Structures are given as C-alpha cells and as structure tokens.
Length: 102
Figure: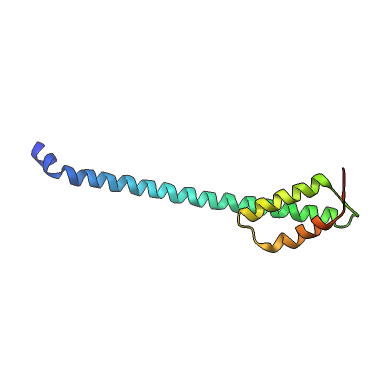
C-alpha cells in the first residue's frame, strides 16, 4: 500500500488540485453572475428614480439644489455602472432647470 501511495502520490495530488480548482471556478462563476444581477438591479433603481424626479420637477419652474445634486450623483453612479445614454436627456433637462434653496 505504501509503495502504491509513493508511486502515485503526484497523480493523487494533481487530481485533488484539479478538483479544488474546478470547485473554485464554479464558485467564481456564481459570484460573477450574482454581481451582474446586482449591478442590473442598481441600474434599474437609479434609472427609475431619475425618471421619477424628472416627472416631478420638469413641470415646475425650478428644482431644489439638493434634488439637482442628487440627480447628478445618481447619474454619475448610473453611468459608472454601465448605464446607457437613455437617461442623459432627462438629466440634462433637470440640470438646466433654475435652482432654489429648498
């Protein structure tokens, strides 16, 4: 038995290493998939909130400074996460509104 283990030790170690690498690869793929779903969810929430704020303030004469700053921060995050330009026009319209203090 000892001779068998000595003779095949490298093969046994390589088999164990391949099994561990395979398990690690599957875990990594699951994490990547989960992160992709989370990114898409965040993008959707940011897009929805920008559209909501656009609807709220474009019919008014002005926009509070805090709301304009929030829109800008949300758009920067949206863009950084890979959001496309569909909300760029909406953000531009919100940024062009006159501001008020509150």
